[in-house]
Image (tube, rainbow, N blue to C red; front, top):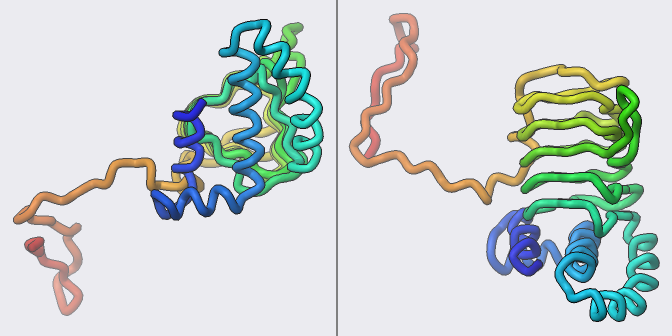
Length: 215
């Protein structure tokens, strides 16, 4: 639980205490933290202790969910690094699966649906950005690094590394979710010293580009 919470905090920009301060100022973080605590109680504590804690926790959790505008079932499986930038109208069903470093926006619903006679909830990969008002439902699979557009209705499988939008949603670009996610969890790319960087050749003349040596 605590490792997942640390990963959730790390999704906020700045790093260190700056990320923690921003997280504590965000209602979305409290919605994510409430899910983490409930998930831990439901899945990790011994059953007698779990039942006793639920009696006291669940009434508070339901009121907190209403106040935060995010009803995330503790039975849902959500990887580390969950980011809820804004709150309101968010629902995640009990059998939904989300990977690591996913973003949920206001008005997002991830829930039950029917497809080919089979009922179920979505399985979503890593680093998926779901924009405001999007609805994702049914026993479908969404790949990693996917961006779901605002107010999209996703009711069929989506491959990795694409952006989808519309009703019903379809692939609209190959950009994916990279530009919508916080980059600080990715390792920095360092350029070795004395490396020669060759620019693309430009037409000869006053604006010609020559190779430059990095120092």
